[in-house]
Image 1 (cartoon, helix red, strand yellow):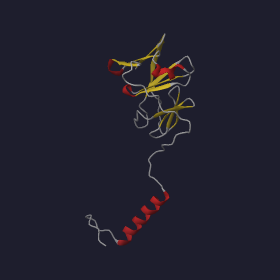
Image 2 (image 1 turned 90 degrees about the horizontal axis):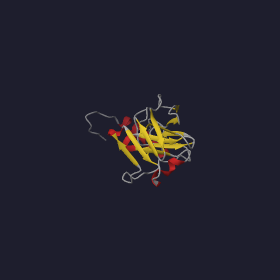
Image 3 (image 1 turned 90 degrees about the vertical axis):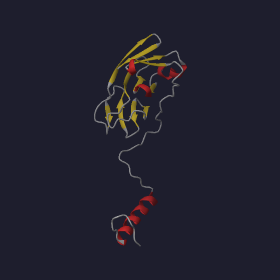
Image 4 (image 1 turned 180 degrees about the horizontal axis):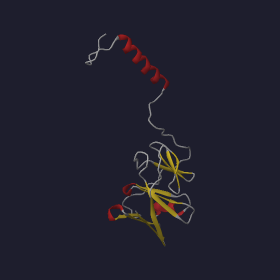
Length: 163
């Protein structure tokens, strides 16, 4: 058997490679650079329609206003409620029922920005498994630096996030 690739491959090399590929395939072993596992019970971000008026992004994304009277963001009213605002690369969480914190959604590991879950007071970037607490601090890598935190103010039924 002759393979035309511009490089000569012996029958022995071909069979060794084919056998290796067959074994890996048969065992269901995949090749991954980083873990993509998540804990059971992790929650995906609530889906907020972009045209329902609950979230307004101003100043080229530097100011975000959230109308808490809008039902699509009602999860934010209770402790542990959170949102991923993809259009502004922003995470927000209700930390204790009364206070909110907001961070960049751009993971400090490799820049993933849309693959987030929140459970047990931890944000997890599901691209590679980095976890951050509700102060934005890394609690598990591979990320090595904390998430950038934004200023949050609450006035009556409106949250304003300033980057």
